[in-house]
Image (tube, rainbow, N blue to C red; front, side, top):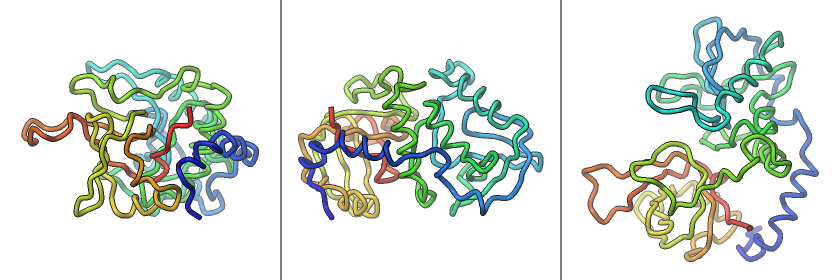
Length: 263
């Protein structure tokens, strides 16, 4: 059933309340399919190294970045790393790989479980990670979203202060993972899908597949002028890009990364 944008806004808070009511800990994932592993090193809140040498990037979440070179650590990055270490310490750890098993950096993509419970889910519900959907590894995205909503509703961790940033507040050359809020200024069809422009500053590429997923939820293609929340990796346009391109670009990975604002 297609839900209109108006109905979604009217019922948004109710939907969140229902999600939280139906959410119970340790329901995300499939620990029965996982194999026992040993973690040798924790890089940060979402990446570990196994004793067999494999580098594992947790599916479904993104945690704040640790200090790197001249870049300072992001808010609660150290806390996320410490929490992951604490969860893994002395626990029975198991791993199930994703449908897509490696990323472009040759890291293995998987779900870690401790004593049968999803590590990603626990980080989300503690407010130390953000949910992010990257197909095809999205089978537990809705469950992870509910875990994140439980943290946001309670104001835990990253949700003690609003992490949503206005698109109009993006700084020159700013890049990286962001939770952004802004008003749709244009929706333009292209051969591979659509370009959704937000505040005449951010161009979001929406593939046909992701657009179809959005259409199952609401009439997003008629949403010019509406306020939306999007999450993903933003980057400034390249120096060689045509002058009419928007200053920033984001590729929308999954339908769960786009929602109408209900504030």
